[in-house]
Length: 197
Image (cartoon, rainbow, N blue to C red; front, side):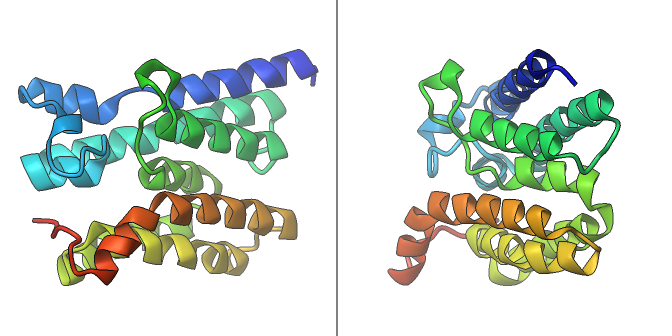
């Protein structure tokens, strides 16, 4: 595989990540999602302000961005678990979290990361995807659900047969997501984290 092709696929992965799912879906409802609630252009903030149906549409679109990015890498390499797949996954998450098209102000990468993992480890991802909804219903905190499934992810893919380097790469993604949730953790500590409806 030529380096040029790999670089192009990674760049495409990043720009797939910048697709403004939350802004577009909320915009259809005449709402600027960056100016309400937490201001975060992600599925959780959409759910809080526009309900589950609209938020789920954003969640699935954000998942699709990374899934397509990995699909492109898979098409190029012929191997779903090639390192290029993970590089494209990270590129899509970075595009989602730091979109050059929106002054680098984006979401936290949970749904995008989950979409990529659905391609790589579908069984683990299905369990964690379901768990996210159960946890949000029980705790009413999207951040608790997101952090819980993120931390559980490396253990799940280990059980599904991931190679050591894949687990390390996934741990890096989890670390990134935890860092993005530090403001949420501070609000949880102060009992100021808003409930999910």
